[in-house]
Image (cartoon, rainbow, N blue to C red; front, side, top):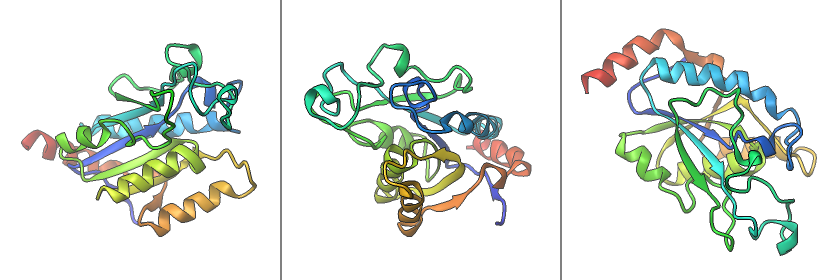
Length: 207
């Protein structure tokens, strides 16, 4: 693949890198922690270019409708204010803007855009293209990418920075196929052109 040079109007969206989705968590994604060093490289690239980094998180009330006790399909996870809802401390999110989702007990939301100000936040910074990685490919990453495309953003899915739940074998690959069929470009963090950082940073400063 031709390298992707970062440019003014790009942003990185990191989806739900929270303890409960990592090994040992209440709703762990297999090998989910493998995306952390990959995403740290992406964060360094965006930080180095002076471009926005956004981190979404599930921030559920204790009686959230998706939980078993409320006849939902998931065990309790990412309850607001608990350890399980915290981001992995290995992820370098010091510069990130945090967006909380699924905060209403009566309504579930997989997408980082649903019921949040994420779209407004991106547009306020003149973002046109988003690079997306995180957990899980077949749920919150999928829905975040689909909504980003519907809202008119260009989307680059960082394939090496996502992992799937795979409730049904192959769910992750089917999700990737759905995202690319919808218009997302599948790439890797290695495809980001480090040589373009200085030019991107100069462009942002000149704006």
